Image 1 (cartoon, rainbow, N blue to C red):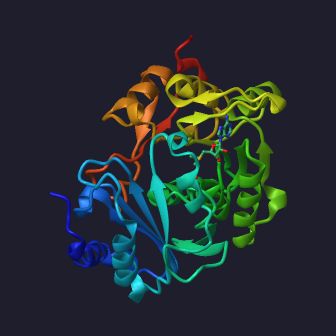
Image 2 (image 1 turned 60 degrees about the vertical axis):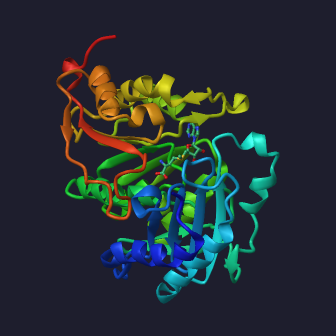
Amino acid sequence: MPPRERDFLDLARRALDRREILLQDPATTCARLCHGRADQLPGVFVDRYAQGLTLILHLGTPGLPSDPRPQPLAEAFLRAAEPLGAAAIYYKPFVRDRSALGGRLDRVLSDPQPLVGQSLPEAITVLEHAVPFEVRLYDGFSTGLFLDQRENRRAVADLARPDRGARVLNLFCYTAGFSVASARAGAITTSVDVSARTLDWARRNFALSALDPGRHFFARMGSMEFLALAARKGHRFDLVILDPPTFGAADKRRAVAPWSAERDYPALVRAAAAVLDPEGLRLLFCSTNTRSLCEPGALRRLLRGTLGPAAEFEPLPEAPADFPPGEPSASWALARVATRSELPTI
Ligand SMILES: C[S@@+](CC[C@H](N)C(=O)[O-])C[C@H]1O[C@@H](n2cnc3c(N)ncnc32)[C@H](O)[C@@H]1O
């Protein structure tokens, strides 16, 4: 039975109570406050970014009314999060096929006026393990930081840390969260994305951490195309981060091929393995939120099939406490790649 509106405030408070330890940490001001079914609210996801909240409704989720009223949910979560300084909640309706909605829902994603509360600045700064990041709460569906990767960003930075000057390549980098975390740990980073806008955002994230931009590289290119170029030029890396979207559009002008995770992930892994320095860390961090690749064991099978039996899986943190199991989310794995002579031939 779907939860009743009069229970929303109680459910919101209980969801926040479950995350009390995280929410009390002044070094991390962004976290998921509600994770759907796991918090007894199917299809309802609430994220906190310092003084701003986002309410994501996965329209069409069983247990969520077909035309849900976001207002009462928004009011309940804003009230529950007021002690944390929350002042606004923005609405982010999510549907698999946005084209069916003729832009109606997309307008709300760029409205500076929140659903409830006072309008916030376009860009706000949040902290994640004391690392500042710029987020934008009314700039489309995504905000600039995928919160479920919090512990992975820290784990990747920790892998780079002991080897001062480790060369980290971050493909499909978006706002370069993994690069910033690694760069702060002493790595020399290269961040690759097709979008000039997100690369500018990435540079602003570097600036927020007062990182020397002269020590880091940004490439506006397709990831596969970058790997082909790096292989030709003999560029080598210690750690490569692969966290691609499910689909990416082609860009003919820049010779970027269309990307499909289901089709292209094995080729991406193979090409990334080829630019690892055999004398270096030889690490591939792989992540996906593509549904079929998130099936239990699917990503590891893909890696094993591509990298061969000599690749070793290394531990990564469990899903963070604010993303309790029960909702499909992302899947990730860390592989230490065998030396070139042990790689399967194709
Ligand atoms: C889901 S985000 C990746 C998340 C990111 N790894 C992070 O840690 O926040 C997808 C990104 O891939 C970029 N992208 C899409 N197709 C691409 C391609 N063929 N090559 C490089 N970047 C691409 C998009 O511009 C977008 O910034």
